[in-house]
Every structure is written in structure tokens, then in C-alpha cells.
Length: 194
Image (cartoon, rainbow, N blue to C red):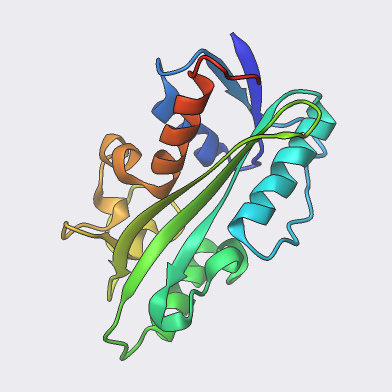
């Protein structure tokens, strides 16, 4: 089984990735070695994804997969966007800040975006994919599953926040799952060169 470094220091993301990929591709995803601390100074999800993938490949000597993802809210001109993880110091403060910014706002449309980049051990791009999950911002938090903005993101076509969905349900419709589905197809294709 081949190893691919998943360029994150977030064990939740690795667990989610492993759950989605289970029995789907002949790859073992691992966390990067100590010292993984890329400077995410890109201006788009795609740029930050590439920065993380190349840094993980550089310090591990293995192929690497990275994602950069965030929440884009229409009424906030796409914010928090690429700054989603740094919108406020803690998860609770990020949600509080978002709900405060949305006070009195009628148009609550939003989407989670995930850009994934797969590079070989030399850092050359093998595959780039984007997944989006559309919904709207709730007025209050609800649900105990997931992480990040999940408790205030109501998934289109449902009355449930992402945090109210089971892990299995989320792993079918999330932005990360949709991007990863395309990456898995690429890994499983006959001409995969990772």
C-alpha cells in the first residue's frame, strides 16, 4: 500500500479523509512529520492547497495531498473565505463573529469550498480538484458533530446544519468529500503516476 502524506496538522481532517477513502483506494494517508508549518500566503484556496502539498512533500519525501477549505458567505463578499481558520482565535469566537456579522441579513446564502492538490514526492502537481457544498447560515448554532462552522451551516435541500448530520451523511455531501471523490477517481485511474 502506497503512502501519501495528508498535509494537515488537524487530526479531525485526517480522520474524515480516512473514513471517506476506506476501501476505496490502495493508499495509506499519514500526517506530515514534525516541523510541518507552511506559510499559507496564497490568495486563493487553490494557491494555499498547493503551498501545503509541496511543503509536506518536501519535508516527508513522499507524495502529498493537501486541501485548503473555508466558508464563503455571499452577503459578506465571500468572507471569511481563505481566512476561515483565522477569522477569530477560537472555533466558538469564529462562529460568534460570523453570527454577529450576519445580524439582520436576509440573504444568508453560503458555501463551503475545498480545493485539493496532489503532488508527487518532488512537488510536481499531479491533480487539482475543487468541491463545493452549498447552503445558508443559520440564525443559531445547532448540532454536535463536525467542527469549524458546521453548527451554523444549513445544507441546501435539508433543514439540518452540517453538525446535525451523522459522519456518514456528511462524508457523502461535504465539500471535502466532493473534492476527494475526484482525487480518488484520479488515484484509481490506469494512468495514475503518484
